Image (cartoon, rainbow, N blue to C red; front, side, top):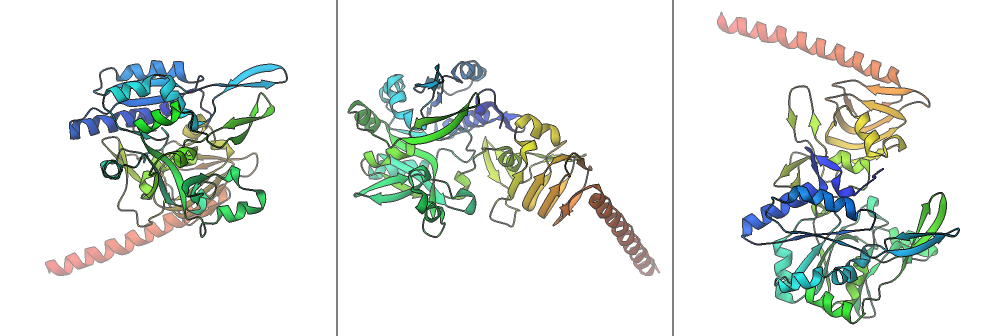
Length: 405
């Protein structure tokens, strides 16, 4: 998304960042239950200093915020030394090595809820926590039904008598299509994890967390490199009474790209500001119940929208998408204010040409391939509105006269 600092400080909605929403959620939780839930932020060496400065703005909040660094592993590129963070599987040893794990245990904390900061659906659920405590489950992974958009997501399997995570990187090429099948593998890992703190301490000190190494190809300074990483979900097989729990899709709302950001933004028109696809309550993002389609719109934005700065520049205001099924945008397309998108919409700007969608436009089940398509639609809309207005006003006037007579 073109981030130059911590992703958690990207503005998501109503001027709030990911981190703002997380803080508000925990403040609401603490107030509602009279508890004292702290927030821990794991950073890489790339984002630690920036995060330290950012959390200062929450000094007056009623929650305790801790930050700690994950490990850094060496890489060598053409004789040039460098470092990289080894993936979120490093959360367990880093939690211990930083001393934060001992602090939590000393406070009497029993479980930690681990989630990606960009997952707006990842919130503390008391029902899940109570289930784990009552059944003495040391580890719980939240999974949710897989759709065609999630075919690369890791899934749970039973192997050698234990629940284990299977990632696509671990699947031989000849079985990748089978892994992607939503018929055979119907669930995937949301990376919302609940883990017993004493169990983490026991396993880390015994050096028992031997997670599978996942090769992650990257490009650094124009050079292709291979980073060796681990996933937090892969630790599931080392914990006693580990389980997966099938949760509603509402608990998985990640913002990995600007197309995801469009789903949770705010619709603005000339006269008012109101929630469209999602609304915000106490930091929780809740879907608009008036949307008939149970699935979220499928949105595909071209490379021109990849960076957040470009995305924000090319939308004068975020369109209304509560009745949208799918949107595909290609080329140099610019959106005006107060636009409404419904059904299936495709917008394509010709190579080298700028295509502007005018203020107040309503596009429903339309393919727009240039200004001429927009002009034709606007002409039809103008004719229809005039015709309907004349017909309705005449009949209403006539009816009123008859009644008076």
